[in-house]
Length: 318
Image (tube, rainbow, N blue to C red; front, side, top):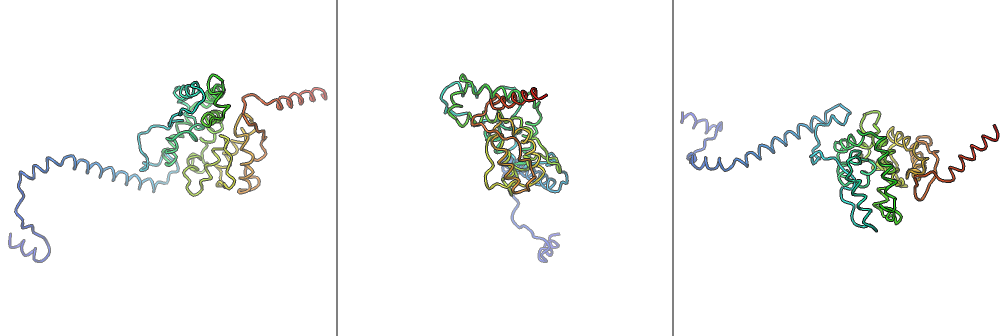
């Protein structure tokens, strides 16, 4: 046997280790001391293999639904949903009543169950991180869209009225405290942004916002979602001319004439700018445009006067 092995070694077919056999006591000691290392190597190998396999399946999937994506290597996991003002409300207030009011409604179970998209956009660090992943932002939108919109709209409207009370944040709102103003505008914009944020792309069924915020080739696609918060479309922005843009602007058009909405001051100019890039009739640019420097929850006196005048003229000329 040894001569046969020797001839095979000389022919280059096998290699023989001529060293003496290892000490069995040392081998047992090494094996018992390496359990953790072996387990961690095994676990990491399995995890790496699983991620690689899932990513491969995801890239070859033909399904258009966001739920068809099996895993998200960029996700930190945990499944925790984002929340508004998760970095805190700070201490830059003129009174102690304002931060107390803000903390009170942020901890209110009814408010939290609504998970308002309008307050996540500007004031949530966790949502900002979720926006980097199509999977995580879709999960967040699933939660914010799966609510009773009428009840949540009533909740936000009540909070919008209460935040301006002198006993709450009235003095800070009058001083244009940025955080208070953003909270107020986010509460007012709940319904238009709920409907825009939950709108789906006709061709894929995925959320239009999720597609827009993860579109790295044209960041202007996401800018239109800030219009209901009173933020104007940047002058050089040219959002992609697609069905999502049309449906989003159509939703806004239904709210743009309401002067209690910050959208009333941003919609028309944005629509005109979009039509420059997409065609003169791509979106409706003729919505009633009545701006107020400080949005009110009561109809303006001019509107009441016009309604009464119309009623009187109809009565006189019947």
